[in-house]
Length: 266
Image (cartoon, rainbow, N blue to C red; front, top):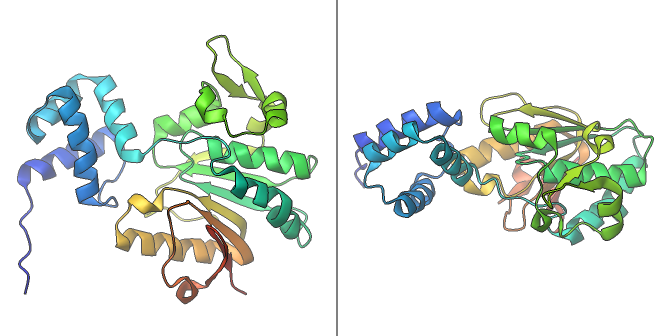
């Protein structure tokens, strides 16, 4: 029998302190991966050891923000994998609208808001007068606040958006960054949510959760995917990231519907 490795008390003390500082439960993340990401920050800052890192974070707000972004993977862009969003626009959303006039969407782990705003553009193009709901959630409150503001987006984050939609839904700011129109912002409800402890929205037509679950433990993934299956109505669509896959998806009520897409079985 393989003996369990005792916990490093310095690491555990650091993790508890960091959880309190950033407001993000870290037990859901893969520990080895999390330590590698933190080690990269420590190397850049020439910090040696968890106790020293804890003190440095307590004294430096910018470092705390750097650590938060490193752990919660707040890297995003509009229309990420553009062909998938084109597929949503031309095939899946029209198919869903044929069955229901008002659709319910959830962007889970929305980061800085690129994903729900991309979805709002599509809905506005397909059905501009439709009273569809888009809920966008994230566990990271400062990042969620930035998403709610809908501004400060870099050109690199907007590069995949079709040019006509950039012209229609973005306003260029003096600094060369972009903000979304108020019309798009009104379509989305942003709120904080922990995917492992908070209740999920229900009777959903589409869930987008892309490049989020890949960083979680297997136990956390199982909890989340089971929750998604229960949250979707029969025939509802789950849209996941390009490097993600649900193993034995049929066991929890999904069937593959194409690249990175799963349908909730009837």
